[in-house]
Length: 343
Image (cartoon, rainbow, N blue to C red; front, side, top):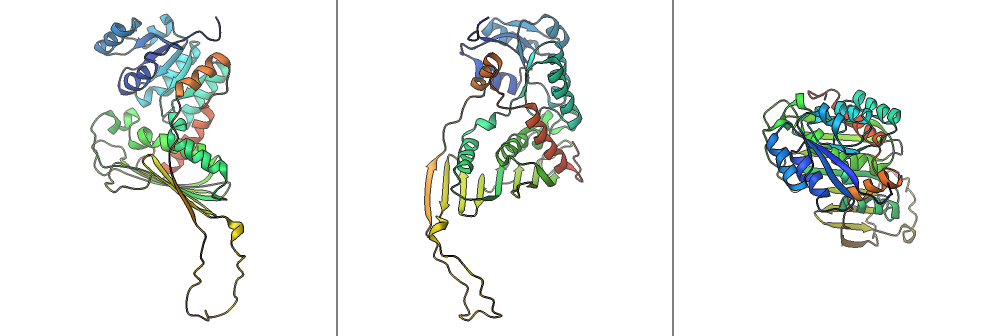
């Protein structure tokens, strides 16, 4: 089989993620072919079979024995991500698992171990690493225009309620595992430094069930950078989505626009401390900083499945390694300590 052959893919779970994200992503592509679907809902299975002429499965164990796919998307409820991924790896399949990769660090470690033992690919659908804002912030950090970046603020906020399985702990629900894991992945990926001190506050405000709908996390990294993160469904204020603070200025993102306000440090005079017990002029020192400011559009995002194809067919390094996702979940787990929502 040549390296340009389409990847035979199966999808487990035909709900919002399986159908509206993953099947939508491969629909019409020439480099992927949907060969198998598995779901307990017969109507959803029939819908997929009618469109794609793929093999139907209503039982996971039967699917593992009789499937013709080489890669499976695990898009079931969060609690099932780890056990189903491990079973698929041991059955010889490559695995793309939806976020969160697991609901405990212990399970994440078991998944990584299974991938190493089987020699199969295990990756996680942390596709926000290719989102417009992630690509912009990475380019900003790489450019050095802000000098040493010492703090990042990230906010994902809105005001809404829900009452589905994501409101129940027994299924691995909660805004942290659902929405928060994406932006936490962005942050851990971008700071590229191990978190050494983590504090979190998780609260349940509006949603029914027994999981959080409001999250606040602050963590400090080995390189000295601090992250201040909010993920909430109970904030009606239009918060800035990103604020990146550096010694030479600040950048912020709202919607599809980014603004950078910065200066050239070489053009400022050196300041010396006046070691006096009083301020002679009775006024604060007002420095005239030669600010430069620009507002620009965010770059277009990239496609997760393009990268995945290169990894499966051509041996390109994974965009999202399970080890990197394990670090994200480590930070998330530390933030849960001392709250009513241990995970």
